[in-house]
Length: 369
Image (cartoon, rainbow, N blue to C red; front, side, top):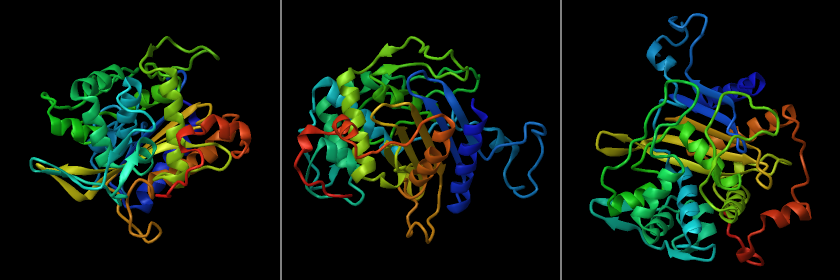
C-alpha cells in the first residue's frame, strides 16, 4: 500500500459520503500490469489503535459495520460496470464485432421482468453505443447472442465465480445462479443477478485493458518491472478494443465527469438498484465507477463504490454514478498522478488520437449521452 494514495482515496470517498449523505463507500487502486494494490479503503472504518471504540460523532454505526471490509468481504450487484465483461466476452468470442447492431427501440419483457434503458435512445445501437450509453437492452441481447454457457465460462475464466485471493483472510465468495436461465443471462449482462467483491471485479477489469492477462491481486510491493505470471483470458486485440471503448464512455458517454485533463481517462459507470426482499428498490442505489488511466497505455485502475447515495442540488437531483463517483475518480487521478510520476499529456495529440480511434466510427457523428 502507498500511504499517500491511501490518504487521497479515503478523503475523496469520505467526501462522496458527506456530499450525498451515503450509507457507506469502498474503493481500491490497482496497478493493472502487476496486480499490486496501492490503496484499499472501506468506510465507515475504525481507529486501529482503539478498534472497539464507538465514534461519538456517529454512535449509530456499529463496531461490526466499521470493521467490515467492503472491498474483500462485501459482495454486490454492481450494475452497469459489468457491461465491460459482456462486451469483452462477445468481442473475444466473435459473436459480436464493433459494427454489430442490436435493436434497443423497445423494452424486453421476459416472465415477470421488464428490461429497459435509463434515458434510452430508443433505436438500433452498435456495440460502442451500447457501452457508451449504457444500454441494458443492448447488453442483454448481446449476451443472448453469445449464449449462457459461453457467458458463464467467461466469467469463470476471469475469476468472478470464485472468492478472490489476496494476503488477507477475509475474502467472500460471489453469489450467482445455480441454474443459468435465459433471464439470468440477460440480467447478468448488465450486472444484476450476480454479486461479486470489488476486489474480484478490479482484478478482472484490469485484465480487460492490460493486454488480456489476469493476475492475482497482491498487497505486497513487487520489485520494479517484475510482473507476476498470469493467465491470458482475452486476446491482445480484444483488450485494445476495450481500451478504446472505455475511452469513448468518458469522452462522450455516461462517464464524462471522470475526465481528468491530461491523464487520458477511460472507464465505465454503474448504477444498480439494491434488492429489498424479493424486489429492487428504485430509491436505494449502489453507484460505482471503474476508471483506468492513461487508457492509451494503462497503468492504474481506480474502483469506487458508494452505497445508497442521496441526490443533492449540485447533482441536479441525481445520485447515479456519473454524478457521484465519476467526479470523485477525476479528483483522485489529478491528486495521485503527480505523486506517482505520471505527467499530464496533450490528449489531442495525433499519437494518442490514433491509439484510441475506433475505425468503425471514423467520420460518423457521435450523439452525446
